[in-house]
Image (cartoon, rainbow, N blue to C red; front, side, top):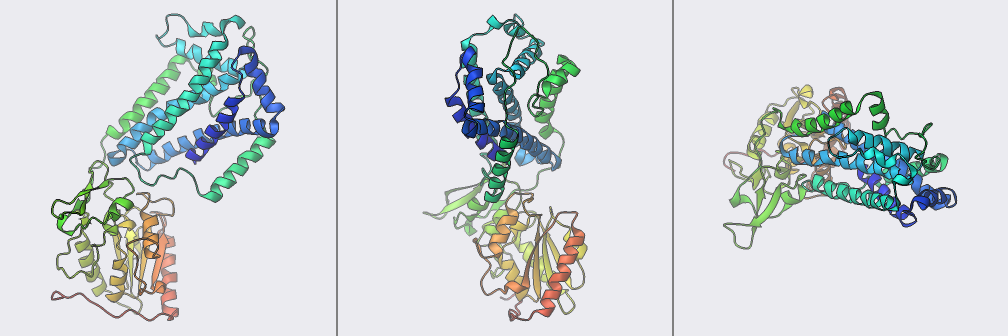
Length: 482
């Protein structure tokens, strides 16, 4: 959503720039003409520019708080967090400068308040606020430079956003179509109902009062009046330093990263395509001329195991006693997963036996474990190869439930999505067509959804017991001699 609002701000700002007169006498009149005489286009675009800017700031700050609340700022996420901090300064700097361009009473108030805040720092030899004491203190060049800065800072912001996300694969630069259209319509309605208009023209011979403040962008000015410039700079610089040092504070030790086994890697590149954090690259295979091998960047690996779930060699039907796959997680190898599944199925009792594969970051599947329900919690639901569903059914289970994080809330971004697409046969590796879909259930939940999980499991069990439309798979158990 933040990206979406930024694109609205950028596209609307380009049009506003084309009709802007950067002279002292013409800057206010050109914007006033745009707002009132061309309200059906220029006025609407100006309002969209204003409200989308506020929405961009709001969603960005919410994104910051959310990532901090989930602890997503250290380890392999450190780079994204650190590169995001300077963007906050660019965002507000651009927003405040945008109000100056209008050059009305609000712009005058913001210019004086901002320069007074800067004068507290030992930067300028003479107070910068003197430039706004008399009507003759500024010239046409001021607005030319101001427009140049207002165009340049957003370009730096977009460049910084690229750096912020370039280590992440499959970035959603646009929200879902329905959400985007609905949001755009809401902004258009707001622009028509409460259009953004200018205050009276700036007059440096008087003090600007009775202003309609934009509290999303210009909140710092009344806060400075209420406290002091020293408090504001302590708050801003202290907060920035705190954001920078947060990833350096003590945190849980990093988990083992994915390991590639050269003899079993055939260079199919599925792990490269599916990795949410671009931690996998492909290089020439050292032992197989003409083939490639996956290389894992330990600094980028999230230890999620999604790559293991995408590897074609991660199938439990392979005959090796000690199953070795092309790419695997040392803390939960596919061979251990297969052996654990066999042991749990062998202990199941009852008429309707169900295997539940869960996610360590989602609902607590241990809460539904019983004599007729075997549970296995994975690092991420995305590390489950679809063939394990068939293997469980052939091993004696009557049904398989796969539980991931809440939809849209996957701890590793794409785990839920890839799992659903693999099990619905939309993505490689696909669940084979001979697996009855009636014996498979996809569920979602967070750590607080144990009751919901238990309810969905009961409903799945009833469905298995009452629906006999599909024939069961033949029983299969892997033996040591197979």
